[in-house]
Amino acid sequence: MTIKNITDYLEELAPLSYAEGFDNVGLLVGDFQTKVTGILVALDTLEETIDEAIEKNCNLVVSFHPIVFKGLKKFNGGNYVERVVIKAIKNDIAIYATHTALDNSHLGVSAKMAEVIGLVNTKVLIPQKGIIKKLTAYVPHKDAENLREALFTSGAGNIGNYDHCSFNIKGEGTFRGNEDSNPAIGNKGELHVEAETLISVIFEKHLESKILDTLFKHHPYEEVAYEIVTLDNIHQNIGMGMIGELQDEKEIRLFLNELKGLFGLSVIRHSKIIKNKINKVAVLGGSGTFAIDQAKRASADIYITADFKYHDFYKAENQIVLADIGHYESEQFTKNLLVDYLTEKFTNFAIILSEKNTNPINYI
Image: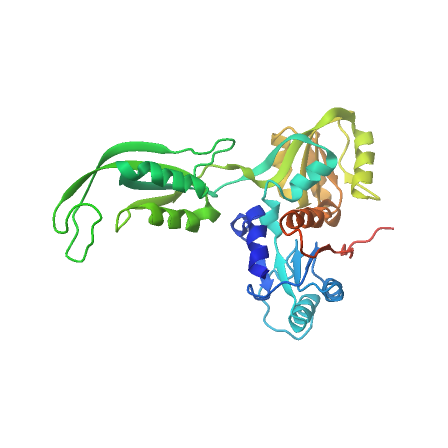
């Protein structure tokens, strides 16, 4: 089993193309062809995480947060990032990070928060744009059905709760090959008119290479006419945060106390309580200040996230309760999510949940 086998599977859950532009995800340290002895799953990769990996004979750390955000210009151990990378390289330990790729997965960080809280009827709070692409291709009538089915098998044509979606128009295509051509239909040097079908299908952008490989493999022409465009449509199952409902309406103070127990909190910072009972809950793992307005527009009664500054609480404006449960605390179940996901696939392989608490914040 190589690192590439592991990362390919992780990217089915959280394709790297889902990640935000500022992020640094994927294999940060190591070689894809290295054989894996064991996997340590952690929220952060610190020196103590590498020590734990060494102790437990794991040569791959799957971390939620990336240890390297920006380019390193030197490796002299002058800060904790450099020390971690140096120790990992010295001990042949690879580091892979998912971060916002997993944040944007509909089975990712915020979905896990919603599961822990017990929310139902959940949906993505901020659906991502620019992730849907459309392929248009032209193929002889007799080959259209075969090509469509091949594209569907490769992942094209999925819209929400529907699959095998396409649009088709029958028409005529014309072409004339030059002396160097090798036409599958017609003769070189002669104008040919062919009854063709225009096929349009959508797909998620991380599938583009696979979709094109399928197109070229199943299309009869020597030169395949096609176009790909990126759509502005949102993807309802990919994006940041989740919003859902409680099984039953709850008194808000009771809910907040239950929240403390579920997430192991000693304190919750929150804005003014504006109603006695709540039902609609929005969540976002990690720093979620940017989504306050979206939570309000979605008519959430309470928005649970982390890293609010003093003035951020004013943005509640008596429309919503803003609850800051802590950055680490909101993401703490992410490593359990990754362990469960990997264990389901690699049943005879050592996949270990890190025992280290890497929260840099302490409370008194």
